[in-house]
Amino acid sequence: MEIRKSEKLEKLPPYLFAEIDRKKTELIEQGKDIISFGVGDPDIPTPKEIVDEMKKAVEKPQFHQYPFGRGLREFRIAVSQWYRQRFNVELDPDEEIHALIGSKEGIGHLLLGILNPGDVVLVPSPGYPVYCGATILAGGEVFRMPLLEENNFLPDLDSIPDEILKKAKLMFINYPNNPTGVCADKEFYKKVVEFALKNSIIIASDNAYSEIYFHEKPKSLLEVESAKEVGIEFHSLSKTFNMTGWRIGWVCGNKKVVKILAQVKDNYDSGVFSAIQKTGIFALKNSEKFSQQNREIWLKRRDVLCEGLKRCGFDVRVPSATFYVWMRVPQGYTSQSFCEKLLTEAYIVATPGNGFGAEGEGFVRFAFTVSEERIAEAIERIRRLKW
Image (tube, rainbow, N blue to C red):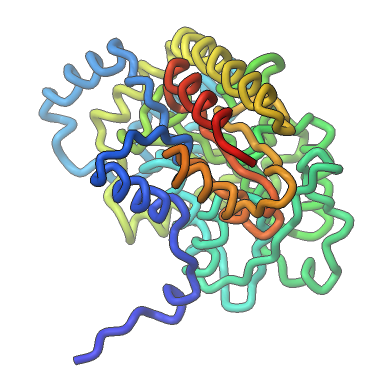
């Protein structure tokens, strides 16, 4: 019997980070000393206090059953309190918040509940590859919004054609931005909300990096008046608390959209492990302590990497947030050829910009999720290369 992939799955490009990890593994098996700036996965351990809370929570029998539904009410209350303190945004824990098995899961399930064949999703390019992949798997069509350096990597909403707007159902925005590391101000969010109200488009804001910043605190879409009429926001404990493997996040905002996502999840999963939710409450209540500790580490690493790359002669844009450096590749190289040279001659893994969309061509992303010592070693290797 011949077994074939679905047509939707055939349309997907290879998942970028899985392919990078495969190549890295091959070199490691050959005995090469790889320094990886590839996947944005913090190398800093989850804080011990959070781990200790999990140890206590996992021993409680009431957390051993199916969690089901929107999540522990206590967790949703903690999210609402955190949003009030951090963004001055009021959220109803019973209707406007839903726990997720990480925001990536929520993004995929949302589109299954929103899209019909022919519906268009407006996706930033360069951008997180899951926005496109989830759209294709849900049967939607992708329209890429270029994020250009001359526009500070913000989408030009006025340039989207009318025929696209008529079919557009949802738009993704992501600030602080992966991969560029830039932030959006409140004026941009106001424009987005006005645009969405005018064109009857749902706004899905991916705010997973809001606590990794170096000067001014990033904003939330939901800070804007009327934002909850058209918008939701995805958030995650992954980057804020170095909990990527724990798989916990949430969606919040427009209660109708949250309810749609809840209905899809009821048919696909059984909720977030309650012990992890209980631990998440502790993390959120101590958020500033843990996130400040992380920011101090990220800042030192950012400066070592950016200053080192500048000394090597590269054109480096210093990020205001995230743990990513988005750098233009030198003349004569494509994103792919630059990364291949780093990998084969210096055993350094970086991510080619075109992997985030065609508009990322000519750039490379470094995730500074390795120690200062390893960053310094990588800079020395790069310095010895001939360009």
